[in-house]
Length: 148
Image (cartoon, rainbow, N blue to C red; front, side):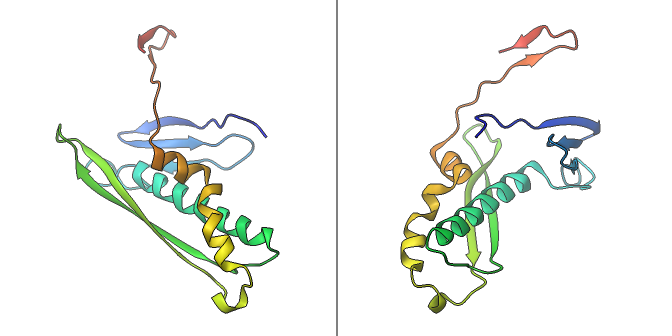
């Protein structure tokens, strides 16, 4: 397994970016909602919520598959709570995720065991929950480091 994931974003106009996932995947548009952007794609907060919900869903499927059980067409909804920090800057202050199984719980022989462990398999939610240190570098068009 590769130990790095890379995504590139390129500004199109105002707050709209083209998101390039690489590896032959189709690009996506990300945009801030009005009044800042045009709302032509998901916002960064929506992308974060999608990543958490998707990873948790995949982890639940993986946990069930360990017991040769199939959860069916499950649905996950992630809701980001937005608040202001001590400097009055908007921040994600919490994420609530609701996962609805596609199959009746009674059809699972090992559902309790899968539910007890699936969160530990989720790379994204465990990382977000623990906090993620960032190393940010800003460069000029010539590659010169402006901020590191």
